Image (cartoon, rainbow, N blue to C red; front, side):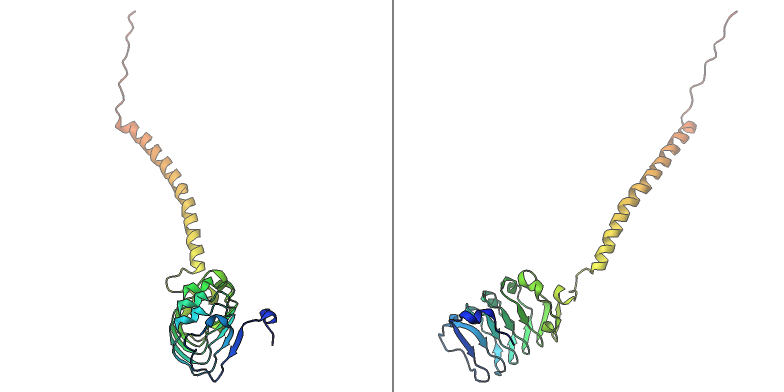
Length: 207
């Protein structure tokens, strides 16, 4: 067990509605929530885009529910979030590229969903390389999980292609020089047969 360092100066509301959550109150000031644990509440349906209004949230847990649909791109507005747990749901589609903007993000768990597509790159997303956080999805791929996406060139293939091009750059001039030399010699040699020689004039000296 550990306590995040921001708990020492906590002035906002910490909410754990485990096993009791129904819905966020209409018109609720979502900016006051810092820790929000909604895990195991049998929630269903799509995640509302208004979640992006949780401007002060640092920890947001939604695991072990029945949530479906896509991960809202509005999650990119959670600029202070450090932990985002969406595991054990029925979320589909791809992980929004905009999550790369979350510079405070340290943990992203999307395991046990139906997600697919390329993992976002850039920012903190390069550090999100714990395989278990992506396990049991439909078809995620990307550098973080060492799983190439369709159309990606394998690193080994890229190196071989580069070596092949370098080899060709050396072979080309190597072949061109001797071929050009032989061709020139052949022209000179053949010209002796094809170009008629001017007959010598014999000078007769009178004595």
